[in-house]
Image (cartoon, rainbow, N blue to C red; front, top):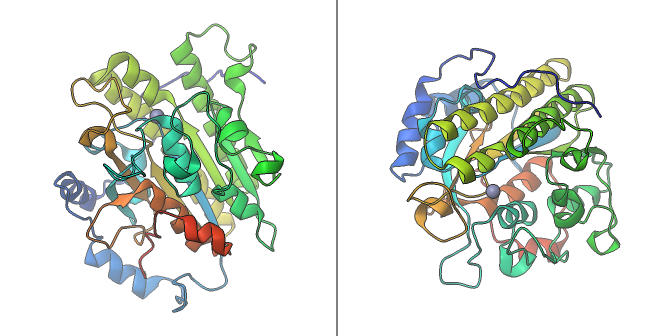
Length: 361
Ligand SMILES: [Zn+2]
């Protein structure tokens, strides 16, 4: 493993086309209104897309692929205010909406707005009363609630999986990679553990070093997507949460959001490059966060305030929006991936899910 030589830049390196509709979508989201895609986009999809299978809404003769990205601890009001050309490019023909974490207030599903709790709710489609992750450390996940990668490996066909991440516990603890009680499956493509490697960027301070890990795993993920295109991949980026805890709301946090957004653009560019050489692939890209932050100064999170509970979901799919009266939740991402990937879900796993697919028919 090598240290990162590329300078860490706050400014995205590319220009992307401005999407006039995005600000309108975000304005709706800011008001708490359900965000529907514009009719123009709908018509374009119906008119120009491949024939749609009326049974499942997917296009025929395509190979489904999914990449989901978690950018840690970015409140919805911040992602909507800061200039984010990377996310704008992803949602240009897709969707953006506010959503929530933390389960349902005052019920057994109420869950701390803490990082590992949020990832685990995304990974298992359940809240902490089921997956049993209520903190970042000292945790004992309940593997009876299958994570989405276990579902992938349970399919009759071979489904390849990838994880690109700081915080090795995402794989070794939350997903129980290779553990018998978690199904015994191993991920096919893994880039993690750099933060534990003393040879990785030893001269950097803690926060800059994790930022360098984020850049490194993004580079490896982009390369893997272009060359091997794992069927299901997760990229986890930590930098924004580190800055949030250190600096709270303000220009430094905004800069961190722009920096992470540039990584989103790196990954989105990789998906587009891959699609150019593999036109039969049907990519679902989902970008989200694991929790908001406190209203007072944006430094903390973990409680049940509206700002801490409010997250956002951005996607290249215009169908990835809640058509329910209530907001989408982080637990809706799992069944959405299941639908897009056309996974067979064991009945007992399906029965435990708390969310529902956002991919409207
Ligand atoms: Zn977090």
